[in-house]
Image (cartoon, rainbow, N blue to C red; front, side, top):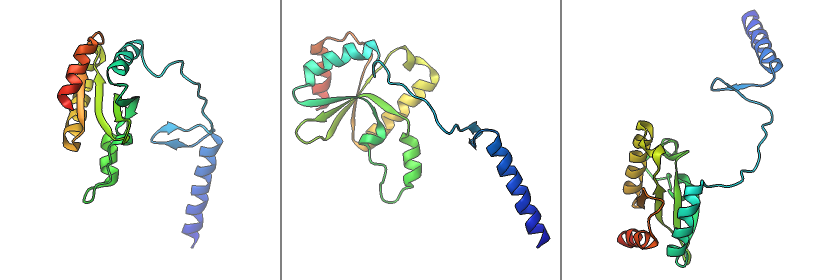
Length: 163
């Protein structure tokens, strides 16, 4: 009985010490009780905006164009027979630059990645391959563009090939 009381006192002291340091920790990172945020001036880079405008001109009549979409917003990870948490952890935090959604049915139809110099690092190449595998296995079409200056005709041709 005395051992339980001693352990309880030690745990209480540790909890009090952590709280007195101004917050708890999670995964070794100090959690604040309140974080500050501010609205970004834009949700896309200048390159992405240029491409968005062309994409909207080419596909905007048929599709709603949703920029910066996380895979979990349009891919269902809750498949019978697999770990939902494990499946979610693979797609969590990954996104595509644009998602074309059928305006009539709201069905996600084509995912688009606009590759720039950041896609040349080893880590990004590995991430891009993983996203390509995920898209292929899910049946979602993925189109990659490496040139922000692709013409509207080139964009139309590439999208038509996937429809």
